[in-house]
Amino acid sequence: MSPKILTLSILPFTLSPLSAVTIANIGNGDEITSAYAAFQGTKNTWEDPETGSIISPSSANYVGPEFYGFYGAELNDAEFTGSITGAAISTSPDYLTVSTNMTGETGTGAMLFVPILEVTNVSAINFFEFAVRGSGSGANTQTFLRFVVQLDDSSYVISNEISSPSGSVTQYDIGTLSWNEYAPATDAWAIGASSSFDGTGNITAVGFYLTEVSDLTAGGANPATGTTAFTVDGDVIPEPSHYALLAGLVTLGLLARRRRG
Image 1: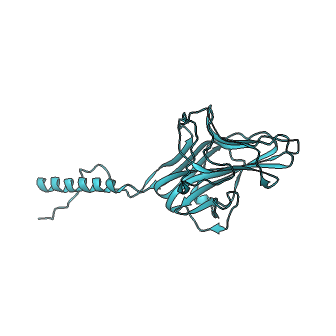
Image 2: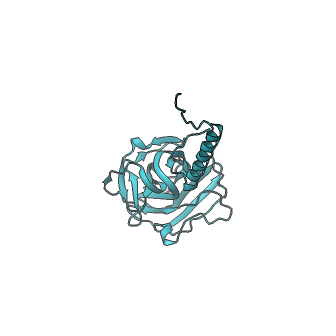
């Protein structure tokens, strides 16, 4: 008599330790609602959730992801302390931007926006998707994009900035990106030394680093920068309860098979 081979054919799925899903999303189909909302933080100061200051737009009508981070402006490479509006949110189309009024100023004006979204149980990034929001007024305006990932207590930003990112949603695969260290709490503008980070590990937050630079020699401008779509796809580690459920189903399958045998 040939031996019986045990199979669990009653289980309609296989156990997968990781699941690739959207782990962060701003715009790009989100129902972001509110005509305007301002950061609950201080311009030119990095806001970190560990300090008890999570930034989410203060409007009671805001619907969308909670975020923290930085927004600020420079005039001729020095901190600009004039008018910075904070985060403006609109539904036509969904977008998230910051802007500043440099009317009457001369030289080079720059705007930086670094929104960060916390994530949980993420072990790897697969790709980023991004579409830039139209720039503000100013001559010779240029926009530059980098992506940001936090790994436990360390932060990283992509090494090569993406010049003039598209207004259409564009995908950037993790395998095409190299990384540098980033210490935004010390200096949100500064890019650190090169790093061996490869997009894997205990990833705790993701975001983007977006700058706009304008020529203000004509007497001023209104630099503004932001996104209509920012999406991150990553591998998520299932919760322990997921494995407990599967273990229970396997046990039931074994019992059912034994009774039939």
